[in-house]
Image (tube, rainbow, N blue to C red; front, side):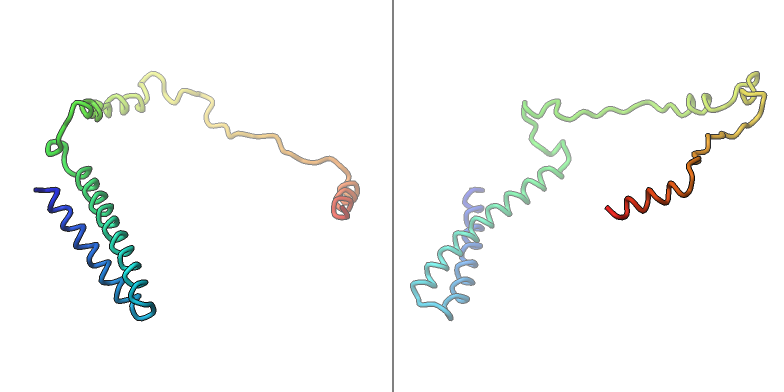
Length: 136
């Protein structure tokens, strides 16, 4: 009986598409052309209703909780729910300095001093190179 209900809904959508298309095309076309285009409108609206109801049914089925879904043999083990134990206490202990170590370095803070990248070429040579590149 459920299949018959589905067909009636699709037929209703198809009929709406038929009437809508017929009234739009009848003012500009002869009766035969309007009926042909209305028949095509019926088929398209029928298929769109079928597709829309299938997509909505799929979305509703996916969003329902797992205990309401029908679980078949193929779906068993498809979802894995793993929770890890809390390790907050271990992380806090790792971040705390141990009493005998101090800061680890008795020299103190020493900033990084990278080498400077300075060109030792003559400025006239650099200007000639730029002019040469500009001409090409």
